[in-house]
Length: 386
Image 1 (tube, rainbow, N blue to C red):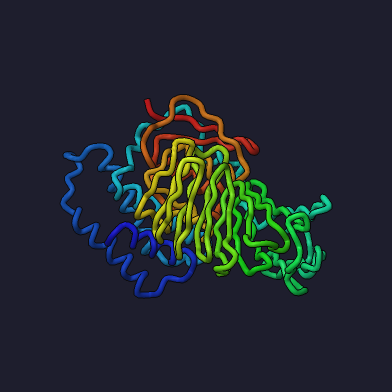
Image 2 (cartoon, rainbow, N blue to C red):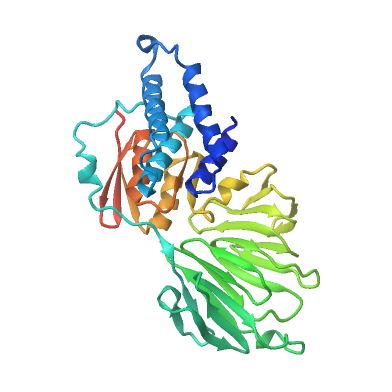
């Protein structure tokens, strides 16, 4: 089974959408993997292979043990599945190099951190702040004839209750800002029907009504867009010196200040990406990396991985530890402090964003020669390699 297909079935299983046939396919696949390696001779195997084999056996047992089908079982299965991905990718290395002075896992993880939730702040044109997760559903306010309301699904909707302005000019535009803190996500729908999902530590500045020949918004952080089609009025996203121009399409933009480049990933339709250096047209499956040195195109990007955050997962592929820490820092609202030289190895895996941070840290510990200690909102990362 291809790794991408394996990951897809894992994702569906964890979200409760996998069919009985897909679950059977997964177990059969692991069974066949076991048979292929039944001849492993432990005395001839290196430490990494021994650890990988033990890890695989544990994973298979957990998947086949279906007495617990509730949330706890799914979390265990999820971590185990992530371990298998690491092992099969050749990225898993020995658990034997543990530092004997490290305290127990229970002690290090006793101050566990809960995952993020749906929360955001709305800033109105007059400067008023509305904490959206603390508001009841229904109409929140009215801005220039546009009704702003919160739905029972926790979404922010801009409803144009009057005829669109035809004689208004740029000076009449009223802007709002929706921002998510660390540990928050939010979804909103603009007055033209465009849907936007904001990732944690992100903000979007936009007009309550699109006036003029374009629909222009400004993004900080990361967001996924499903743009309503309107060929007469292109949709523009501006972020960190980059402009993405679309007519109607689905795409993701990641533009955090501490990331080395702005990433624009196209899932459907077409977009034009530009900065001071050049202008390029993306096709579905393309990803543009935009930096001060220019624009780099990846033709067959892993769109599933880029969309994992929107679908409620962390998904890593050949990721450096510090890159993973940046994502965890934003979602769990924590800061990482590094002690000693960290391993240079890359990590591959998938785990739900709904788990406490200790579950993610356990996965990384067993896959990467590091140990963690949670102290309030600070997490210390220590190398266990000699």
